[in-house]
Image (cartoon, rainbow, N blue to C red; front, side, top):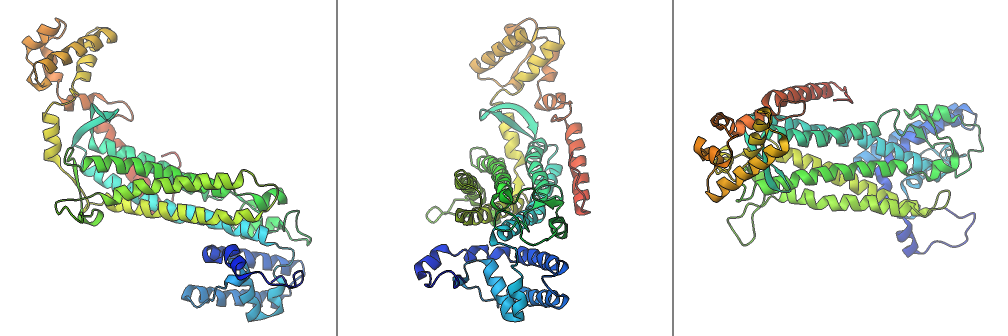
Length: 472
């Protein structure tokens, strides 16, 4: 490949060390897409004849079939996806294949291919996987609107909430991710492409970079050729989106791991997403959730790797940038896999809500979650909140010392703590009553939860029709 400048050949060790085709062959579709756009522009400015352009187009059809069928021979000595495809094209059509690189560099070529790949994966695969998980969560939430569970702060029981409201919190987290993936792949986001920028300082031939950009579905070319060939912000953006999504998934997984323990017992995860123990036959381990939690560190690590890779690079292209792809490929692979696995976890077959066990937890009175209703009720009687807070604290201390539940309180008990605790308060001491107090928008009252589920179902319906409401 370098015969004109070098008389010797690279050492075999160096060939293996420097090759990227083992992983960047994933860019083959984008490489052909960009090459076809560039070939058409070369024909427009007279570098290629119409026949040569037709030969290039036919050659790429053949190469596409070879790659898709697994017959294409990837060669390490040709270093990367670009040279492998160009070499095969030249074998098939002769000199027209040699003309294709006129004015183009692998620097603007790889930047273009990689950006197109990131946009495609974000817009299609990642977004679709996020939406599928949202759909599973909405289905489970709809089935469990009437189930009340403890909500936790500091991992201590705080207030009651509807299980559906809790699951809708997960929906909002993943919904946010799906919008980020969509924006990353939209026509405007990352709209500029570097194709035509050459090695660093621009193209020596009069290619129309605006035409090239539009032919690749982008809004416009990059403004500066030097920035264009060395920019990897799009890769950072995508891996950041993946790291954020994985952080959300890890938090969800942690809840499910806790909920599936014998101590909680709120849910039972199905056989399809759990495993046993090699020594303890009674075990049902939440391996799917644990792996999601574990892989989060891996994806976050890829983000740090990219930042570290880029932080000291001088203008413009440097071979260090070859190291960007494996981080991005693995980050997207792991995020896709985890989104799909979590959708499986929340499927009807694998997410069983143990309603009786949850009710037992609530009936135990542990955590004194009804206390918030006492403080609220006192406020409505004209008692300043801070005084109501103090009175309620004393009532909690009373039931604690008596080893009682709030459900066991009598009018005499209330009077023994404070005269402002009237007998009519007793009917307010149910968890259902406390949940239904949360009537504000975004609250856990049944009407609000049902409204939100209706909004989400509408959004999912629009998604199935290819639409996206960014403000949902």
